[in-house]
Length: 92
Image 1 (spheres, helix red, strand yellow):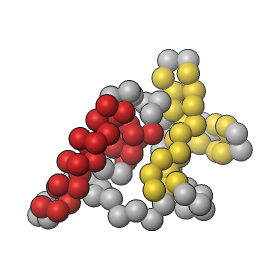
Image 2 (cartoon, rainbow, N blue to C red):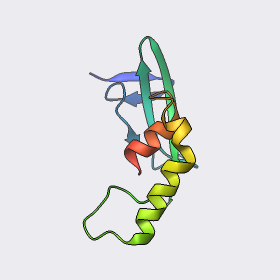
Image 3 (cartoon, rainbow, N blue to C red):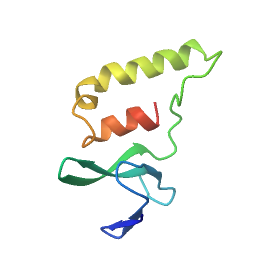
């Protein structure tokens, strides 16, 4: 199932994909919550984020992840139609 929305092709709803050629944002997702559909771009292009937690992760990266979640907690709670939710899920 392939969906085309505003010139972008998506593999489905709520499935983020990388956008290496976008000048500022690293990912895009076609978010759907109920009947609302919204294209959301998120993540800084070229940013070195903490990524998924790894065994033996440095304290610096743990603090970096915790800071992001604390700073954007209110927006993450807004759900699938917020960029912070997707950045938290994919990049952090």
